[in-house]
Length: 495
Image (cartoon, rainbow, N blue to C red; front, side, top):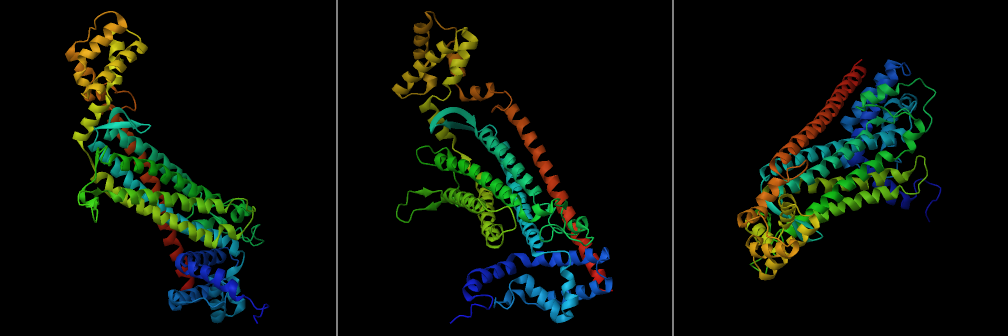
């Protein structure tokens, strides 16, 4: 019969504590190490601990790091978690009084949320770096494809001519906004909970700003209750990641549609194509399918984290800690795979001009410009021009010929609608329905004409440069903090 008075119960040990210990070994040990060292430095600098006592603890921490083979450890239940394992090692070396001094004015509550932020900070910075690399590649590809004609679709049907560069520019704008949301969420990771202790800070004269500085945070998080109760740094981050990959999935879906045999305007190179095991004629652009399901898995993993926080109490709780934090890391894993694959795929793809031309001819996608031209050159209303253009399009589609061959039908429709002959001759008609004319005349702000796109590319690069600068400033601050912490801690350990 199990001894129900002895902690931990085997079921609790095996289902909760052991997995948490393994997670701590994998993800949190470096953060705990940094927190221990920074807290010790702060206690010594503020005179809360004598320097000779702090020095003993520092040397013991160095010895623990050198002697403890963390990857080889198996959870036994002897110590509740990794935190208590380190504390037990300190007690074994220094005795309980000196060892316990390290925990002055702190709690596992503020330590937990600090270490979670340290891990999320590193993962988010890596994700942001990938985002900026992809954005740069997208801008480069859009510049390359600035004048490459495509058929733009609405409601799944051919709509108007555009350029691949213009389409990618739309994707870039959304991606930049998604990146800005992720940057904003990253700001929520840059405030340090240390010093909040369990809930209300401490009666000791701790220096919370120094702790934040040593750990590379921008500042301490102000309200001590919020330090241990607020989880918006989690929900905000995963919501931002979710939106990025939800939006990305829509572009990926277009790539699947464009590469279908019946459309065929996107060519996926052979290096990204798998051949059927039984049907030798098939080219399967399966990386697009993997992109789609990996993006969807990222969205789902983010939802799992955010939804776990639903209807939970506004206090320190396990619902936002331990296993939930680890579950969220899988979202970063699938997100990074999407970014890396998309970074390789989009620059490698090209547009098939023959299929674009054939689809344009079959669908009369330039007929909008014919109507616009009639309004400008013939002085008729747009409704009249629309009717003439629609009649012309119906005629050529019925005959299975390109819109450029519809001058006679146009002329008859114009006479029928207006009671007079058009001033537009066959040459002017051909120019009005040309895809190149369509693009060139749409030179408004945000349009697909070359000058408008060039201006957009300059703006995107400016925004991207700002993101690079912010990212680099953070990296510099964290690197300086690491150097400062190492120097201060080593000074204690060698006294």
